[in-house]
Image (cartoon, rainbow over all chains, first blue to last red; front, side, top):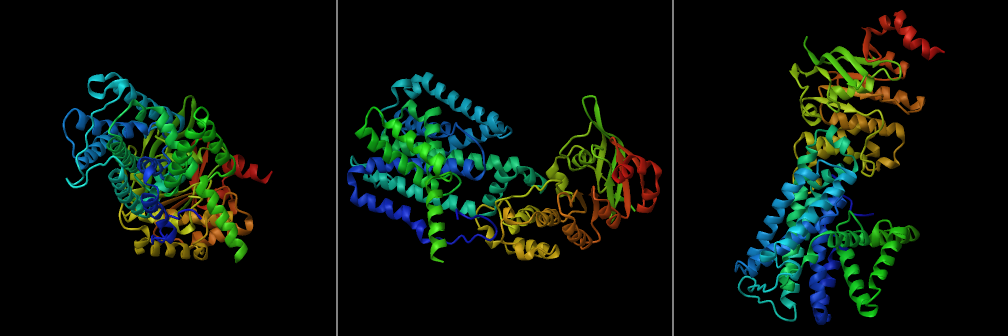
Length: 325
Length: 249
């Protein structure tokens, strides 16, 4: 059974929920040469978690989530390279707030629409952001990207080192906080009502729920998270390029979430891990055809594992339990 | 006695097609009222006008004496108008308990809580269980809706509406799609509903209508044909002509 939410769901932690953190901890000690890939994976897990909240739980369809991610990335980059604010916490919070404001403003428009119209609008907003970043060369560096990003030590104590140790732990720390907050939220009445809106918004209206207000709230929250993930990307890369915006990262993120399993808290963990590790591996082995491997993986998941990789595992566990009892 | 639900000169047209024509209707507190009429008479349109899913072309809707014509659905629910749907409109992948709890949580204003787990709100769960008991489906509280027989799903529909503690309850064909064996069970459940709730039932099943309703309104082509006690309606020749006559063919 996937995460069961509702008024009878037990919010106690299960032992399997410690696995992501165990893996992340072991990776830190056992795979020191992969820490920068690790930080990237952790960042994309945070990003995927923000998408899962609106697609998986609230049922808002979007192909433009990179707008918030990219905005967050640029805000942190510009603060450091152009304005001289190097403190990572100030950058992170500012990126979150600015992305949240964009979420609030665009949410008011796109959440009135449904289905394809909604999808097109989210695409349009992401495309607009991309074009703005492309044209505003003096501020964003345009197609050349924004370099000269400097990040001060976290709390004035932990400097970002060339091996990526600090960056990895910083990402892990923030992901842990975000995971805890999202987990609280989906077990809380608010999360249950989001699931209700996804399942049957007609019924939600009929029981007197302020559906639109609630969707705007979760959309803004998700934008804040995506913006912070963008800030993390800039801080770990110390560079911002146009590739953080637009359709491609939005689409890739969706692929990651589908791989992992939509509407499951841990689908957002498994998807980016599998996608980015496969990307790294395939790009080294088959530099020209690596996208073929990703495509194949997606086709297999969509054909044989509709609930994503986690859905597949759930199925196996259920069958195994059925045999033993 | 003042009416809890009233319409004055309610009209709705889609282009040249008029589906509600000057409907004046009153529902007294605690009444058991039925709305009948042949297919396409505009019964469901009328319900949608009452609940606010449709906006009338002209005319007004009052709940408890207040004009709610301009108010959205959710606001009308908060003023005491509950409804069930003709075709089940449930949260299919959720448990029976959660289906009811969602509505109760909205009414108790806890549905926006972000921090405490939903399970911690005992008042929501207890009240939902009490409603399931009232309707005789408490034993199925943990089942998913998809695992529940259709007749019992109809009862969940009613339980959700009751969780909103409505002053007026609109039941849109509560027995639709239910085998006749089980429709008795629905009638029993309806009889057990609190006496102070005004109930308007829209139903095709004439047995159910005549056993349940104290007053009946007949709607034909968007207009009120007549209104009266079940005996008066059963004796009315016009009703036989347009409605009951068709049924006996």
